[in-house]
Length: 190
Image 1 (cartoon, rainbow, N blue to C red):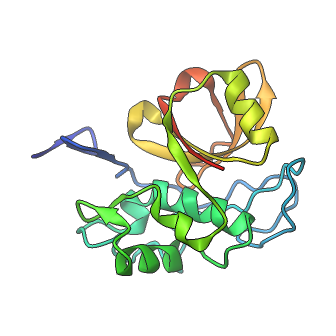
Image 2: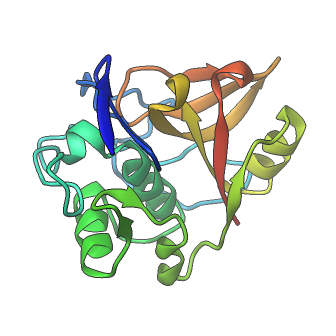
Image 3: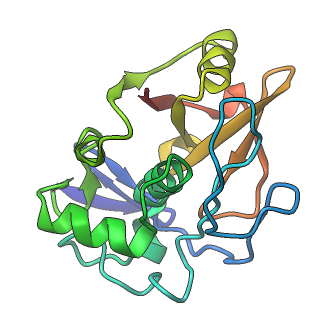
C-alpha cells in the first residue's frame, strides 16, 4: 500500500525520494561531471551525476510512474559508483539496463545486487556501520551508498572528512557533506 507524506511516497517495502531537486552539480575539486577517471583507492575523485540532468531526468524510472529526476537517487548513486570503477554507464543507460534485466522490484526499487553483473562490484549488504568501518571501506575503495534525509534519499559517500562527517556526491541536492547522524543505513559494494 502507498501513502504520501510531505512529498514522500511511503510504501510498506520502501521509500522513494520524490523531492524536486536542484540540478546544479557539486563537483569535487575540478573533476568534470560524468567524466571517468583512473580509479585508485586513494583518489578523492568519484564521478558525479545529477538525477535531474536534462539527458535522463525526465525518463521513467524502471516501470513505475516516477521519473529518474523524481525518484532516481539510489540508481544514480550506483551509476556514479560504477562509472568511477570503469563501467560505461550514466543514470539513463543504467536505468535502461536495469529495466531490461530485472533490476527493479516494485517497478522502481533498485535490486542492489543486479549491477554486479557488470563485473566491477560485489554487493555485500545493507548495513548500519560505524564511522571507522565506513572510513575503512572508503579507504579500501569500496562503493558505499548512504541512505540520508530521514530515509528519503541516497547519496554516494566519497571520503571521510573527520569528526563523523563524510564527503558525498549527492545526485539530488547541492550538498557536499553529511554527518554520521544523518545516515540511516548503507548499501555496501566491494
